[in-house]
Image (cartoon, rainbow, N blue to C red; front, side, top):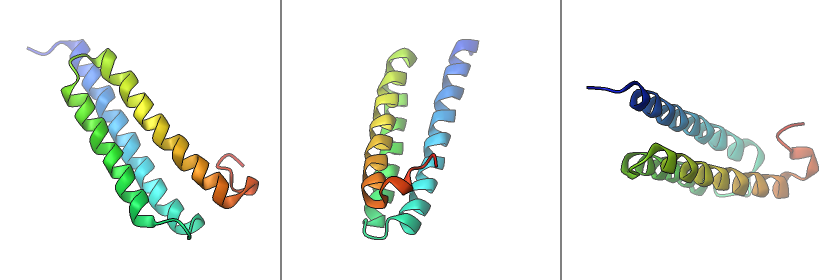
Length: 98
């Protein structure tokens, strides 16, 4: 019926999607507070688009070990793009880890 490995893989996929959804809420709040010159709707749609793309990758890829690095590259690229725009807009004092 269900193999333990498949259940763990799908739980990992679900956890990654939930983590990305949490990042979407962070972006939504952060753009509103710290980046008033940035288009808020574009960032919201972009982050939700990445969430949908990650879901499609998890569902359509034939192997977990193929889908995981693809999703890491997608999410990492989106996070890096947001971070770069945020640091340019807020300057050195606006780093997330300060």
